Amino acid sequence: QVLQPAGDLMWLDTKLKVKAEKSGVAYVLDRSTFETVVGVPKDILLTPEASFYINKMNALKLSPLQEFSTEQMKAIQSKFTYHFFKADDTILEADATVPAVLYAVQQGTAKVKTGRFHHLKIPGGTFGDEVFQSARESGEFTGRAEHAVLAKTNCVCGKLSLEDFLSLPIHDTDKKL
Image (cartoon, rainbow, N blue to C red; front, side, top):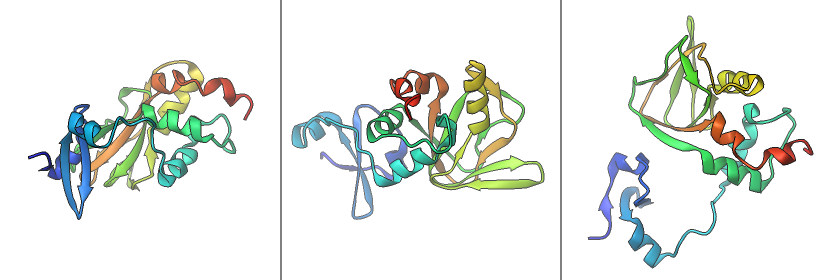
């Protein structure tokens, strides 16, 4: 049997498996079979939603009006790693020294606790911007998380570390934009 129902496993990242969904059922297919049938992936696909969300991430830009090219957005998207958090898992501890990472909610909801109030982050929302931006300006790769962040529901978050972002070749063209 080539296709196996995957359930929640479609959000767990493995380099040996390909995740697919058909008629509301998720499947995991081994990569060698996928490449035999479909061929080797030649390019990163950039969906319109991903393009929109990446251009909204002001922490990545030198100025808020900067727009990334398609090639720059593909490069940025390729550096995101995706992590699954169960409901009520702590994603970030308040007042903790953490790596400079920009988080982007892909599925589910995250809750940013800002004192008495909580801000909900839904798909397309980001958090960790302040740590990412201040670390970028200071040349450090860590910072202090001001607020705790919890997974309100089961959620998948993309993580882009400052080190990975700065390793991208897009910074030579940033000055021209």
